[in-house]
Figure 1 (cartoon, rainbow, N blue to C red):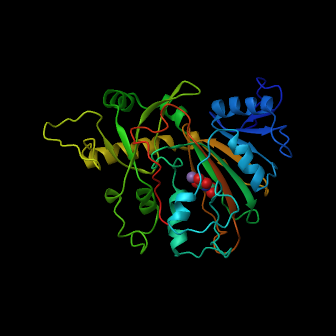
Figure 2 (figure 1 turned 90 degrees about the vertical axis):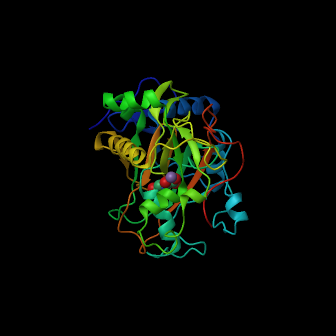
Length: 340
Ligand code: OGA
Ligand code: MN
């Protein structure tokens, strides 16, 4: 369904892509640093639309990092390198989300890297498991499989999903103001084969969680939203329900009983990922760039038949969230999750 161009913008052309969110932006000259007055309109557009698609942006690695830095302070992969991981890419501010091994060969199905990467194929937000969450992510196609082999990136609009939440669930969320406990290993286990040799013995409870309120106000737009993702391992109460609860550093908040919490998590995720809230972005050409706001939308890597056959070389710059909710209920440390 074609959408009209948004007339609120003078310097860029913004055309809505899905029913409630997402837009394609044209008219930006990426061959040089983006001018502040153009950037201001891009920022206004991402606050409103949650996802922006720039076709043929054709940034190189350096300009990709520089454009991302206009949005705020960048996350980097230095902690992972310290854990022994190599970086195939020339900037530590670029996250390698390709299907390539560090030596450039195609990732094999059943390999460690394939199993670890499967977590990206279920709806999530970036870095909700770290002490400071991600705000914007900027994903760029460097090399793509031929058309018809899949590998879209899908987005889900959590602000619209909250607006249309069934009244009983909304009341339950408002009454309880739950904490969501996020774990990278939880989503990886959820997405990988149950008997994955790389994940079957990993226990999310033995690792730190990232804690954020489920119900939030998206600060830049002022709209209510749910901060949810398949990283959600369990829910917690902000104030203990039981007089016997003793807080520890690993478990500072009392957990919602497991079955009750899991049912609610799945209900929220099912509701928010219905087709009417989902936009599937097809990567058309190397040089396409998609920017999203992890505090307003979820995303997932679409599966396809390209695996083991064609390179899908995707590179991501990640901007630390700068809102008041950036650290959630976490201690302000530089610890990151993830295995080499
Ligand atoms: C990411 C991610 C999705 C994709 O880069 O954070 O989830 O389609 N990528 O590669
Ligand atoms: Mn991601």
